[in-house]
Length: 161
Image 1: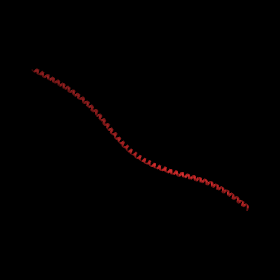
Image 2: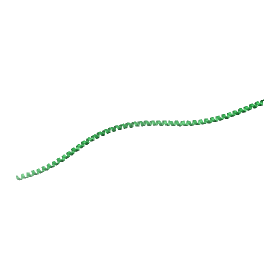
Image 3: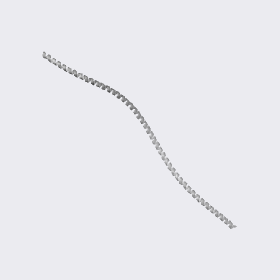
Image 4: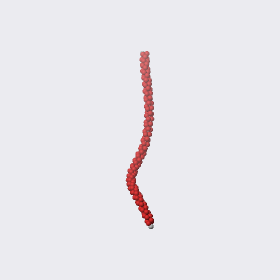
């Protein structure tokens, strides 16, 4: 009958409506779950973006630090080269000074030998001077005695005449 047909259709419509309600609920749950997952992913992306920005900043700082270190190394390299050149100059000066010192030592030794000879000669001459001075004094004394004798003889001769 028609009532049964309508009841059947009503039951089917109610069943379909319930199924659609369940599907709608599942769809809302799926949407809610997807929104939560989306929020989690957005949070993760945001966190990763901040991490990336931080890392980029650190890389830039490290790059700047590296550039500064390289500049420092270049300066140190130049300073090292100057120090090497200065060291070579000083070593050359030291070598020259050593040679000059050796020559001066030889000259000093020769002068000391000459000085020793001159001192010996001076002592010899001083000794000869003393001897000659003594001889001269003795001769002067003899001469004085003779002059006195001659004077006495002269007086006697004068008395006799």
